Length: 274
Image 1: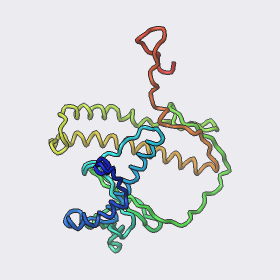
Image 2: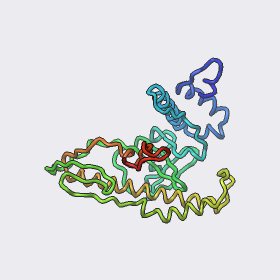
Image 3: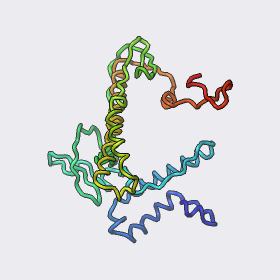
Image 4: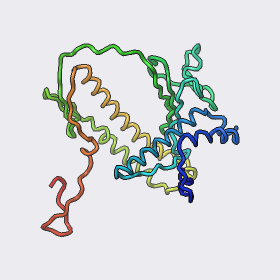
């Protein structure tokens, strides 16, 4: 798309044109592009189309555009299959007690299934996080049973010292997962800083292990925060029929304010919050 637009003709290429080119590309390289799922490759093109649509929307709105960046093989972590049975098959060996997913071009892959799937599987996504791989399913379900009436209405307010406070005067403490992992993360980052910055394929084994340790710690903290948020939300939904909250931008609550110049002392700045 970029090269076509840079041409003198200023050609604009859309998803439909790129999708039509897939047949020729797969026929030209049957052992490379032709071995993968056609529908999955189309899903990747749809993601590209959404990225460009969001880019042009931001340009028209006067926001920071953020031109879509090319994602190489080491930065492309998710593969989507729009339909179960087209390029992939969930629970491909149902008579086997071990759950497996079949991926076109890869074969059967054993899955550590942590909970049963409710409903009919519609889409399958394979996601890479570091050295781990996850299968994400979207299933079609019947209308779920409504929760029993709790007879309670509550208002909540997100905070910093506490995770949240409700209108009944109760507080949910902030677990401070990041602060608890700070010392270990700092040591791992110092160990990583001893290695020179080189291309990923030029890293030594020890360098790769140091990178992985830092990534694992960040991933652990992120999952702990998500787990705490989901469990807190589940408790609120089970205990109350109606939940009111302020329309806040949580990111702004942890963002440092822009420095303000001190009018009495040129070259100095006022303290935060002044």
